[in-house]
Length: 107
Image (cartoon, rainbow, N blue to C red):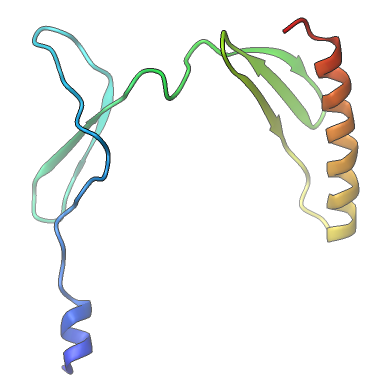
């Protein structure tokens, strides 16, 4: 095994770049966990505010949907995967439809 292969096989521990979150005793948190390769359990509580949970679907089109919350407008576009020219044209059509729907909404 040469030097490059040895360096490629080195496993680094999991490091997170997220800011620390202060947890309070007695409070139930939602979150996720994973088992690292060295057997440690890494727990990540969900941070409120970054993922709004009160989005309501206000428009349900054929190829798009519009969701609203108190401070957020989310537009979801779904297009069939075809040739590039067809996807571009479908995208233009959906954007126009979304614009019309947004004009009708009371934000």
